[in-house]
Image (spheres, rainbow, N blue to C red):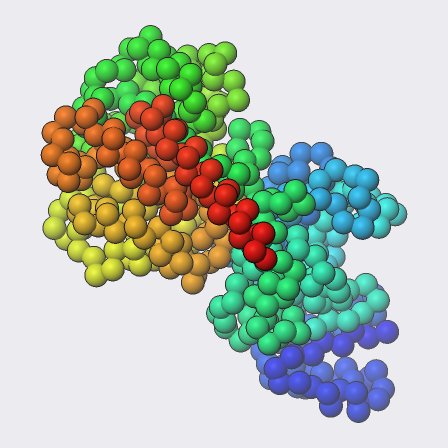
Length: 527
């Protein structure tokens, strides 16, 4: 039996009038070469196989056996080695099993990629990867599996054979498949190929309408489908509540608490205090990034950081807490993660170290990409403070950094975004950010829904724009103003807030989250 592959736009119904298999082969060869296919041959399963110079594809990933995240990581690595160039990642979802319900929860995601492989060659490579990662033939249909790789879309074409159907037959009934698809495609029409994918949904509104009919964003956070961040050996469902990150500066010259916590004992004491007050995360910085700060060397930063990091990780109170490292040096990242750090917070989003993205891609930690123009020594220069629409430009510039990170191999599901309050921003810019967090997400959403869904970190704590507005020259006297910023941020959609004063800001977070839950409850009651 021959596989028929047809371009959806324009339709090629004339194929049904070509009767014999031989004449079909000649017909397809003649006409598909006009669409850029370089060769056509009969595959090992006796199907017609087309080889494109480049085809954009969407591949779904699922796993519920063993180390699910490691299975994903290895599958992506093997895909790249097999000639599948990954360009975008969806968010990561934990979902209840479908069809066969007596089995562990799944991790689900999807990727967009470009490949020269024909559809059946692609299928063969994916099946080989599944086998290499421990999937065995003859298992229970829809049952447990270490890895499941499905071709959802292949170029502009529909594929039908005894062993392959593209688009995948049951896409539109599965929220755990449509959610990642929305992340990758959304409602945008990137190109003719994506336009075809939307048409495959059978809805005039494309994927957006298909997703809405399933329940849309209201499904996220429910028991059966959670958008999650892999961190510290677990999965963080950041839609449940806002996390509080306590700041620990080991520097002699930080604007707020420089010189206070340079000894290991004083640093550990401060961490103990912040954890007792309710911090979920501790962000340790050994290099000042205040305006006009002088950059120190990698070695000097490590000399400050490592003794404190080891002491903090050894604290019984730190068990279950997330330890973050605030650095823009990839060598510091490597050393800190090897010692047990869980998260990397980079104020430069990779701009100050060309090796940063490569190093992060090889690690299993989330990465905070922050918006900043220039570096701390010149970020407040006139040229770096020019904005026409600060939220729109932050969204666009931040996305360009994250896009490069993705192409370097950092999945979207490991990225946290930070608009960079106080970094290359004037006072009015910072206020626009606080009011405009949904606008920043919306700007990013126009380019990538997955990145727009990423956890959003906000760090307004005690910064100089609060001194100007509130006339508080002493940084320690700006905590009340910080609480106001945090309240505005959380109600605007912040998922992580980074602060010096954990206790007071945690109270603000709890109140905001309670308001949000009540609002959501009332909305559901109305529906």
